[in-house]
Length: 158
Image (cartoon, rainbow, N blue to C red; front, side):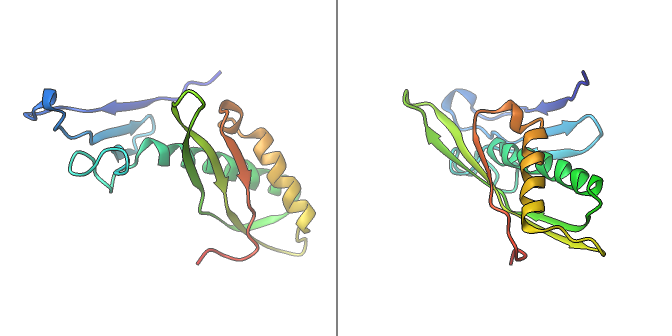
């Protein structure tokens, strides 16, 4: 099996930690060299202890599911000899509570718009089948209990 890493780094600095008035903004570094500003969602921890420009864990979770699905979708489409020119997904996730009161990501909806070109264009059934297979193959979707749905769009996002 392959290993995938992320390095999360946070420093308190001179902030009053015990009062709870400290920034939760942090750095997320990936094994390939990319870095992002991480933060809790402002709906969870209000600014200035969070930063709306940072990537929060909930957004990262939704993005991971969306990216994984997209990568399998374009690969499967290519194997079926369909040319994908554009894949644009405005995915969303929703937090909710379990029966015992724990917060969790209850649902993620992928909303991809896919543009094809070439002499061989997929039918609506072909597209639905590719989405189904992409979901079945997605490592991230196979790793979570969150409901993941695909609401394929026939029109581009505006």
